[in-house]
Length: 208
Ligand code: FE
Image (cartoon, rainbow, N blue to C red; front, side, top):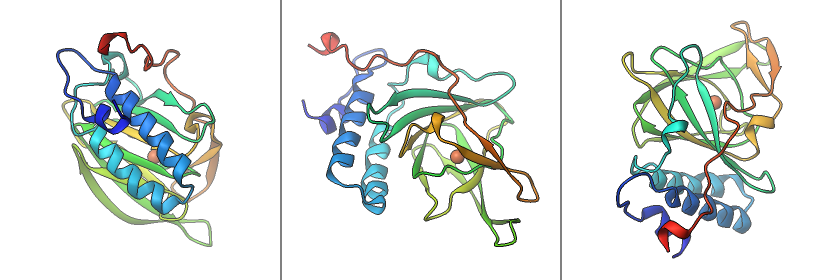
């Protein structure tokens, strides 16, 4: 079965991690075919939209909110660290700090809704707000230093968690990047991940 067909394969009961395997294989194929950011974001957006078109594949342990802070669960990192796939889980009222990414990224809402506030840094170093959106289930957003890289993401729901699936052009948990104070002062951070185990994408016996 080719990778794209695996993304779309219907599930017969339980979660089907083969859907995520199909996605990461298709994304590796995309990055082998092009290193052009525009092309990656355009085709990658379509792949991510297919992945999140159904909410039946993400193992429950990567959907758990934490009472105090949003969670960032690594689902897959490419062996050459060309890309990583992450499940972000926000409890009610939780939000990220204002932060950048330093690499391209795609954000697709799997469950719930998220408020995205965008900012741009002025030559003086101050931050200016450039807009705000609500992302609903199955919508995909993009970031990069080229198209706008600074934002704050908040769970738009007050009564339940929201979950989005992110793809970045690096092992994002290891990338040195910045959070920003309201006056624009940057502070370096490396996010890491909340989990110590990742999904097993490679046991094909269930589908054999
Ligand atoms: Fe972000």
